Image (tube, rainbow, N blue to C red; front, side, top):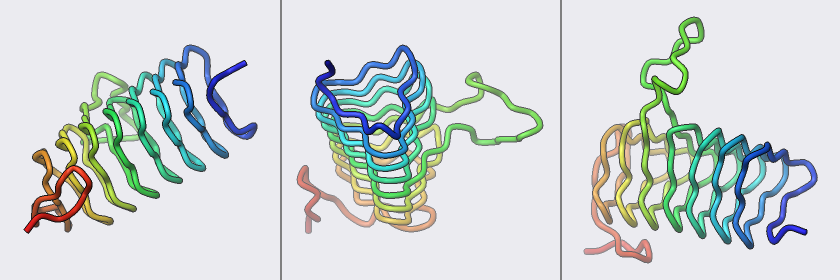
Length: 165
């Protein structure tokens, strides 16, 4: 008996660790070597790639892929259909594999809005807030409020996500 929930339509590969209280909903795929913490929620159609590490209390909304090279610390929020990348110069004809992936780190408590894109190789700071539709192309400071294409800092937020004046 497991102490987490996986919907019957989801696939969990071998060598996966899933923490107590985590819920994995419809049509998800958790790939080999992934590590998911306690009390996480993975919405419909979430893919967690090989060797991805996800902390405790993480909430991943529908239609998000966490690609190899991405790490989410505790209490990260990933909004619906937001996008991570892991290769700056992808080519179908000339795949680089894991050696070509750039690491992306999302620090504790950060939130990424719906349809935002996080270009690989950057760190999203602790409790930072990325607006819906933003495209992050550089490191984001702790508690920064980022918006636009490309994303620019437009303010600061506190730990609860409230905008500071």
